[in-house]
Amino acid sequence: MARDAVDLVVEQWGRVRPDLDASPMGVLGRLSRLTRIVERELKALFAEFGLERGEFDVLATLRRAGAPEGMTAGALARASMVTSGAVTNRLDRLVAKGYVTRDVDPANRRTVVVALTPAGRELIDRAVVAHVDNERRILAALDRHKQDDLAAILRTLLLGLGDEADTAEVAELD
Image (spheres, helix red, strand yellow):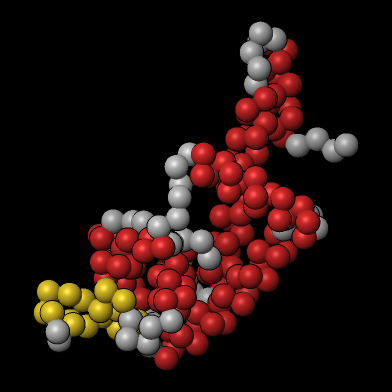
């Protein structure tokens, strides 16, 4: 069986600290390395569309919401699980690019409503197709059954760490 860099790390710990069970490093080390590799792949894809990861997330969140009237900036912040300042920065960039509008809600002047422009909707519709294709390519080493098993295992781990779904705060999952 082929070995990866994490195998070497775990083996090195086994040699210098045979009293230490370093097996958790095998799992978490691989998750960490995988996260860095996947983030690099996603960043490259989003750049092809002139987007940063956070901008893609905002556009995707608006598109998934399916509400042509948009979402409040507060709802976007909760859905993105980032600070309101981070959402503001993302929105500033997306407004400047012409992909979203940000308007005061006439019913409540303290509320800002963010909506996709036609250009933003067209962009996210193209980008999400490429994104799913890219994710499929990234997962190509696993058949569908193994992907389903891995998803179930990761769900169990996330739930065990308290990461339960709050439908009001579904975010950067695209």
